[in-house]
Every structure is written in C-alpha cells, then in structure tokens.
Image 1 (cartoon, rainbow, N blue to C red):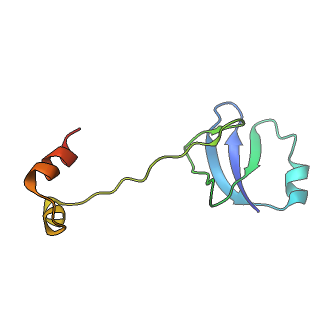
Image 2: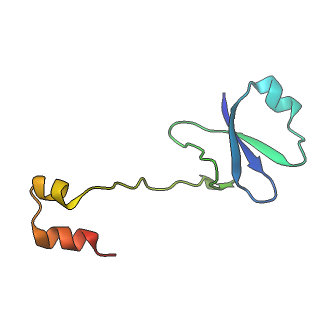
Length: 86
C-alpha cells in the first residue's frame, strides 16, 4: 500500500513509500515517524502537513497561461486584466 512517512514533531510528510501491513505493524512504535496510508482521492505530498483529524493538506493546482492563449481562447482585454489582478 502507499503510505506517507510523517515527522511526528512537525506533522510534515517527509517521504512517500510503499509498505505492507506487516511492515507497518513492525514500525507502529517508531519514535520519530507516523506512517499513514494515502489514496489518489486523498493524496499525500512531500512537504505538506498531515493532521490526524482533517487528513493530508491539499493545495490547488496552479495553471499558467499567456495573454495570447487567453486572447486565442476568446477572452477580451478587460477579462484578461481582471484575471491577472491579484
């Protein structure tokens, strides 16, 4: 199964690994790390946090495009200006 290695002190995912239940059971008392399974529906990402209640921290993907691509897609200058404002 896919698991995340989580630093107990910080709650940060420090590695992504594969392990079977036997390995997880053998490392259940690890003093530094917690090992938590993850799924494609609730993925783990190295450097993000894990909370036992809310699960793995997620970030929205960033999409980068050019003004030309937006213009080619039919957006007018006013809309493009609005989209590029913080």
